[in-house]
Image 1 (cartoon, rainbow, N blue to C red):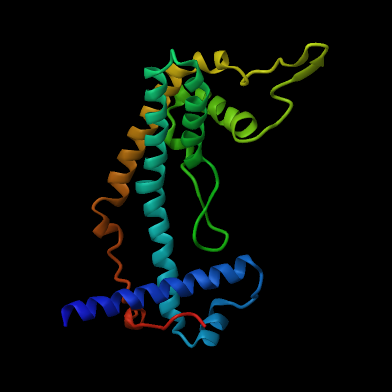
Image 2: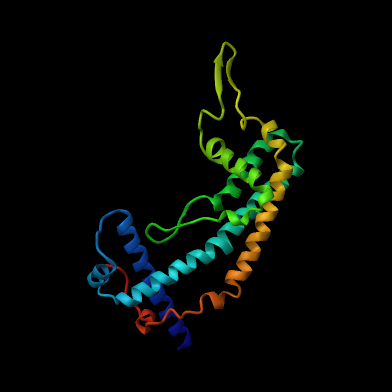
Amino acid sequence: MEYDAMEKQYLANSNWRAHIANYVELKRQRKSNNSIKQYCKQQKIDCEAFKAWLKNIEKEDKYVSHVAFATAYLNCAQHSLDLLKKYMKTSELCMPLIRDSIVAYVAPFSKNDGRLTNTKWRLQESFIPASLKVIHEKICHHRDQIVAHCDIAPRNPRVGTIGITMKGAGYYWTDYQKLIPEFGKLIIAVQKNLKKYNQETFAPKEIYFQDPINSPKCADEDPGPPS
């Protein structure tokens, strides 16, 4: 009986989440101009319960964006940089590893979509020590204009009789090799500050999520799947 109750609760939670996803997707595709109240009326679900689940999803997004996603991307950046230091003599690996480290590091500082309509998340600049802001901005610049995109101006190309030469910074391995020591310090510093923030803000997570999702009580009842 206890297992059946857990199954029913899991199904109810899944259906509420499905309603949230359905509502957000309709808004994103602009297939619906309905307010929350109108959506709930059409779906025959409780409006206050729907709002409670919206609030819960928003809190979940803040939690996972910092504790899981930002932490994981910074760890990836660190791992790629560690591999780069280990295999720096293998020239074929240098550029792929530095590019991966740059992309992974900058990802949490970019504007990333949340699950709710028009919500974004990103790490704030307060995670970056003042002494390392210059290298942070440089890494972000390389990611935005050279690594993740193909802007022409930073490369400053010149077409000549021998082909195309690149006069700008960021195209050759020598442009990145000198950045590695400071970049390594930057990643470690942000990791440390993020860990401290997560411990102060979310740990233990039971406190962060202390508002019960079953308030109002109908938020704990199965609304059925979206129609």
